[in-house]
Image (spheres, rainbow, N blue to C red):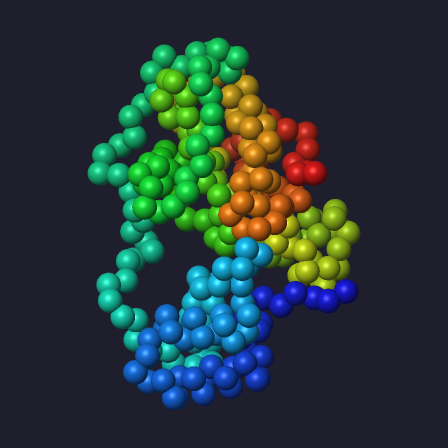
Length: 253
């Protein structure tokens, strides 16, 4: 079985690292974006939809720079501080008249947050920053975000990102070795954020939302990234939460 290399592993290989240094030496007048585009083309670094993996290459270049592989050109233009995410100028309005049981909720639905320019993206960030216990809206790797909508207002939000790189109990449960894990790890995604708003008291709402996610995350992920995940993982702080809302199985197929 052929093992899939990460972008960092490809760029840090002796031949490719030499190619990067040679490009930097010959193109002192060009910036990081030009280098990123060059590497995507030269190394055929594309996703399953054929789109260049610009963000992944850009990040790998910065990580390897911090490890002494090379010195990148100075970043051009205004760079947004990742610690200052895009958010609303006001709090998200509280929902009204939410019933006590999920069967009575009108218009329960998931709304995918598609781009950072979307107003829904700002609302998602605002909810996570102000109402989620972690107060953190950042996700890693391949991502999906949803707002939990209803006729009563926004009931919460949920977000998925790339899975934990190494997790002994998961890897043992699946039964894969290191080589197999590296080849298929992209098929596992992590439910990194799940918020039911503190003022919402609705029996079985969390479980219903998880069921809605299982019905559509696979197809939504495939539409965005070109392949379907096989498994969802998540983590529960059992000192604070029971995890009782989780459905019996998180297997996608």
